Length: 65
Image (tube, rainbow, N blue to C red; front, side):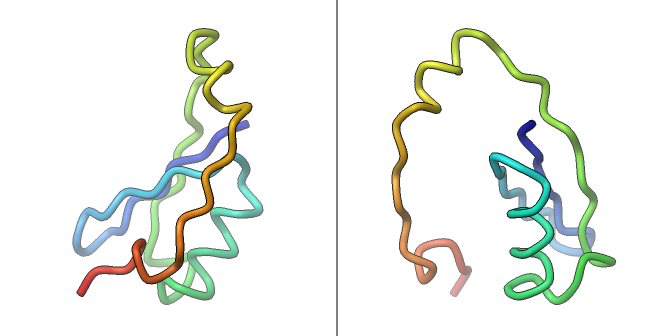
């Protein structure tokens, strides 16, 4: 089940394939889970085919500068 997290201070949104990945990102990169709002993203059949392909994004591209 996909999860979207939103930073409570700056509004940054990040989408994850599962809650474990979202929690890990919030703890390591985002300053702790208490600074994020977790939302379950409803699965859409049209987007399911695109989720089969995996794109690796370097960590430095996900952080703001």
